[in-house]
Image (cartoon, rainbow, N blue to C red):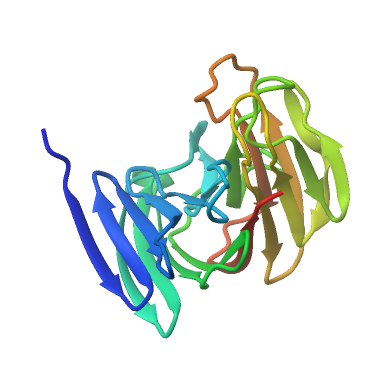
Length: 249
């Protein structure tokens, strides 16, 4: 079977639609790939440029607990346009069903990449109200970083940072317990036996500080995203904005 591979270009940006991905390229002397939006899950991956690897993803749909079920990631639809030199991805998707159903739309604005860095400004709007489960620190997650850390030598993220404090990622259990309230947090990349030059992803919330925490599930599978770091809110946020930058460590 031949996969669909449609290429469209405006200015220096080019988008390749392949299977369940929108792949974004920025062309100067060459056309390296800087982003991939996974339409089957709503995960966004950023690459700081030539010589860098792929690593931690941003889950652009909110995640939440409702009715004893955890809802994270869902199929999305996406369109794109270029405003001057900014690539704008517009997405929409639905999580859950029945009384636990939420819809969300987002605008992802990718700035032209710099040397070893690419940044996006993401605005999300959530429609609907659901009865969140009583799970402090994880009932509603407007933003989640999804990564892999299965051993001391095999990882996409080697450490976590919040409010300027950096900690080693545990082999299992909570990351930042109690949570750290801040606008700034990150998963730090680097090179491991699994991957060379995995990027650091750093987030800055545009609005008020939120509780930052995370969780590691033990795994031996090097393709398993077993590490999550997120911003938590005690209620559903109907609108929020944040900036995320991928840099080569």
